[in-house]
Length: 546
Image (cartoon, rainbow, N blue to C red; front, side, top):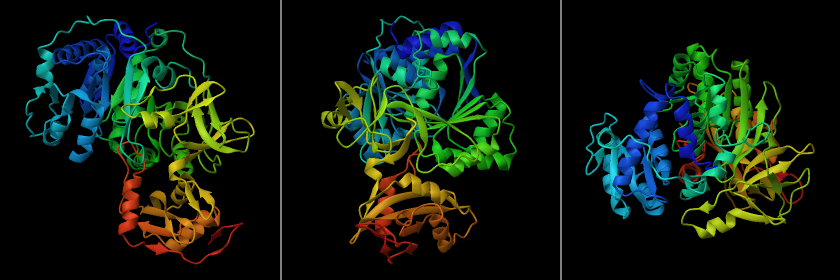
């Protein structure tokens, strides 16, 4: 078995030729049409020198050509590098330099940035420009449709391997992006449908997804996140391997998302946490949309706070709502089903996926009640591209077995489930007490006048760090900070209540919905707080808190 993404797609293309594969806006393509266009792009990229192990930059918004670039790279045994379309020229230079791209496919609107940063891509042999209707020129690049028209539509590529490398750059929440390298077989088994996510049972072979797709007319999946996010890539690819129709939004707009649900009779919507769920549910109520086709609503890869989950469950009572945990470095790590009115303290409590454990401070499996680092064994990534130091720190040996340990903290419950608490590098240590930002953010968002919030630790002469929050009020609401504090004290312990609060017009997040901690710390350092609490009362041994 090859267990290669290109082969998995080709199996579906051979079976579902007349089905709609991808639709974006007013454009759609069948499986047969997509296969032909992907072959043409792959032949063009091969002509300019792309081969096994090379990297093809993808600097574009969601579109059919973006999907074609992902698949064409796989056909050549190369890897597509996802580039955040919000990057400045300086960030783009870093990506060009770090990822060693030999070709670049980008939207025409980004041509000026590419021209300014291209000198930092010494291995770049050619560029392909997607015409997005912008007025920017294409420089030395080849027009996307021109390149396809001149290339062969034939599927005449050498055999691929499950050992071929798929690369996903993850921006995380701090620091430079890192390229996580996966063997195709490993990432398929953990993220792209190679296992049953509810049972953990592996699929029998590389044809199983397309065989299952024959049993129905195919699902319609709305992948709401940008393809620069690994969650959106794997959701789209998993759908294409199964003969489903993948619906993309060129830009995320909650009303456009519900219009797409109505228009295409979407069955499954894949989102990224609160950043998408909250505006989606508010738009749903405001617009009176028909969501009767929807059977599943899935969130992963970002905070999905209790109040937002409850709102989703109440608004969509007949829909199966799930939350999955995991990261680019671990793949799928666990799943939970969301029900209206369910109590949640801290992060989600999930049934762990295959080979998922929690490690204590001594590197041993944690006992029930203990907090440790989430770890996954079995099918794991190869490491970070061009970074042997961080690669070495990513893995741990437990009883002779290799585990990836990216830094997420979790607690083992008595029944064997796992509660995700948050990233260790964002945990606030205030007077010896550990505070997990996600728990405080969930409490903040449960206030009716709060739309979004981001919690950080800021320096404190007495406590080392104090809990701080940047809070975005709902439009048209005047947030009473005293009432907000009283509300929080009914939700969380006093030492977790933010001592410093900034009211902001909007909480900055990455395009994938992850919190932008760099922005938050910069804002907190440069702007006077809207409210400060300096009084303190004793709270526990060695700790003082209001």
